[in-house]
Amino acid sequence: MPATSGSHSGRGRRGGVDGGGGDGGGGQQRRDPYEVLGVARNSTDQEIKSAYRRMALKYHPDKNQNDPVASDVFKEVTFSYNILSDPVKRRQYDTSGFEAIELESQELELDLSSLGTVNTMFAALFSKLGVPIKTTVSATVLEEALNGTVHTRPLQLGQSLYKKVEKQCAHFYSVEITEQEARMGIVCRVHSNEKSKFKLLYFEIEENGGLSLALQEDSAKTGKVTSAGMFFFAFRCIDLIRLI
Image (cartoon, rainbow, N blue to C red; front, side, top):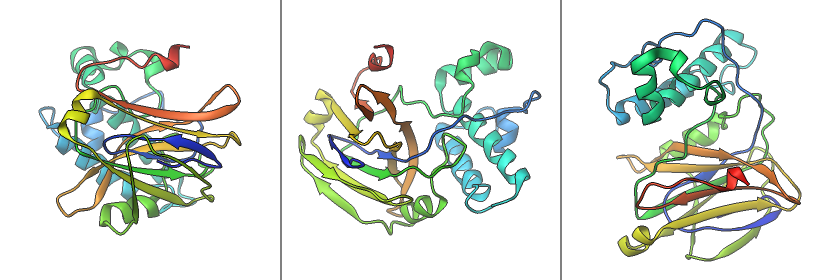
């Protein structure tokens, strides 16, 4: 995987990184997440993800500059997907509405707690984009990934790279793993010695061969560097790094 003026070693599945930080907003009166995404309450995870991707690209800030309405819709769409893409939050909402969801969980970020096992990992490292929404990734990069026009560099398990990524640019990487390696678990970690802000992104392969953004993690200051990591295991796990 890559690093912004830093180093990182990666293993296993699909993922990525994107720069940016900030906090997400939300109105006092929130609409039903199912209504926002235009899906039924019994929709599958894939249907929810497809609806989110379609609406996120349509209302993305990069495509709607100086349009406060589109910006608000984008935030609402992202917030709704944050709930419905998380099995726990979705069940809580279905049972008791927004009140059942803890306040701190109502931020605009994607959940990284549950991932299956796959045989290829795609990763992209973006420099800081300076946008105010945590989950904002360059619309151009997302479209290029979805269209399959990005260049992915192969990596070996355990291989470390030291690369610098310019602002609003991306580096994509792929790693091939066996089923046995997937069962053993994969760790992907990126850090920046210059304390740059970035995002680690996880992509899934579409039927047309393109890549769609599935998950992401924002970099955080850890000691003398900023870092982000993803952990892929064949069993349920808890990320204790956030608790240290």
